[in-house]
Length: 69
Image (tube, rainbow, N blue to C red; front, side, top):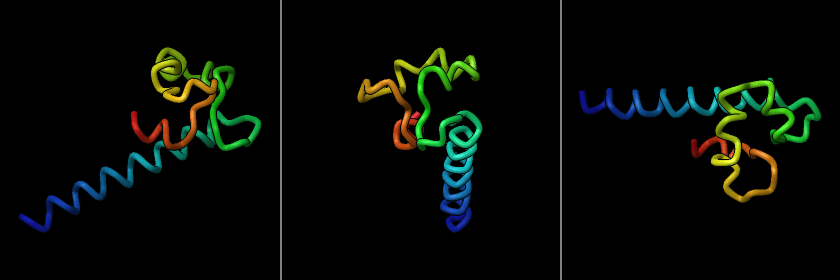
């Protein structure tokens, strides 16, 4: 059981990273590696949380900002 817990945690962390990369690949229409507010508008839930997720307030969501959600 003790070995199972780290494996489960690692699995969920990997899934989150893949989901983040998929989101950027899906929405990043100009391929600059980040999501602008205009690009985020394609996903209603992301657009609604954009200001909260944009922690450095530069108008873009970077992979690290999405990672912290």
